[in-house]
Length: 286
Image 1: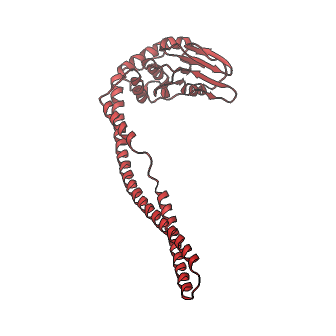
Image 2: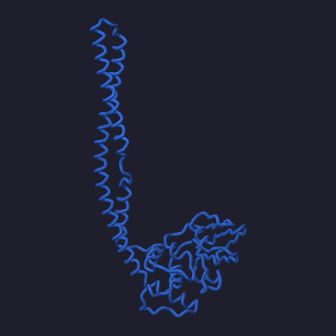
């Protein structure tokens, strides 16, 4: 366990592995600062200098009297911090790699569709203009009038028409390609849904396996913590959900391994120093 821990609250700086904060401050702000680089409180800047937390911190990073706790979920995450493994881990890794390889965004159909509509309309207008110029050219020829300027204008219109038709054709091909890409995207989405279902099932099985493996050790920590805080321990036969959330959280902290400080605001613990020693972790007590 690293001894490096520093907390800054309203200009006051605390250091050490066991920190007591006597200032009036919302403990949740300190928890948020532990999760991030720091947060801005209403009247004071709060910063915590410590390593980033593991997923289990979400459940046990803030221990207080009114807390609830999903013990099985937290136990599985705590087990991961001490090298907990299951028979489902390789399959989970494979599924996660497959999910990461799937394109997250659908193809942009609107760009090609708008371009096709625009160029098709332009080509239609130029065809009408070319037909009009041909009529004018025929009439001027019939009456022996000058035709060169009309011929030049017709050549320009026909060149623009050819370009517009070529662009419209390319846009139509783009629409066809994006429609095919959209069909492939929908296929990938169906594959994604199947993989996400598979991942969820694997995660449930892995969680159950970790809970089964580490429940005996967790119950030992529950007994130890209950003794330390002079509270009647849960019976060995008691369901995990029946264990007091604060006791369970403290037991999980003893079981887990991480260096982000735990924020305590509970009546069961007398001091940050005692908590740091008994729980073997960095403590901020408020």
